[in-house]
Image 1: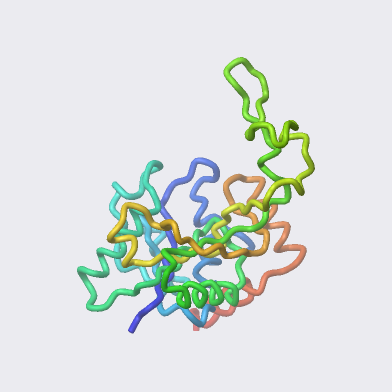
Image 2: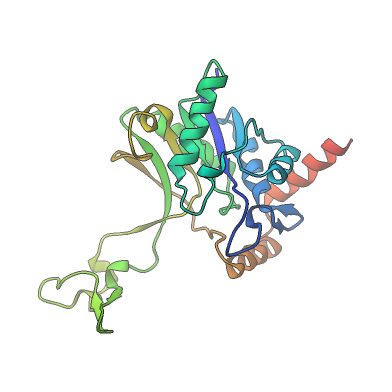
Length: 250
């Protein structure tokens, strides 16, 4: 029985980087890294790409993912939510296959550098917590946002928090505040039974999964930084992708 599906959303078009999801990153398209990480997981049974593009679908299939459907355009706009494509995929499987996975591992292509071992750890973590509605990854913020400012309509900075112990909150040491985590798309896991019976996808019992600090690709500068990381440190996923393509060409 398929109990865990990895779903990789990859709609066509991007305003920050043209065709970002298939832009080449060290010999391979960005989406290939998420496909590879899912394939190397020992806990994931199937790897699905949800896309509205025939071109993207062909690339995903070339790298070993399944593309059993094309996402309807109504769920592939700038205003579309994660819930839109997740519900569409889950309902498609309900309508077309006899068994559907309960756990769906949401891997965004914009976070390409992952360790499959941590993906497996995240899956096992939520499977052991039947009271959890979801799991989301995040890394600890190096600076506390409680020390940041808002700008009011008159052009003045205002602290995000009110005074703390009669002191200006933004001038207090960062140790004054609790840790804050930045969601990063490293690995999120949702439950089909929860999503299809609620209007939200993560719910109030969202497991906090602390991941390594990672960079998401939302700009040319971030893309170049990840390229620099790869050139400096190397990435095991690239060796896997190189070998996978060689085996497919034989």
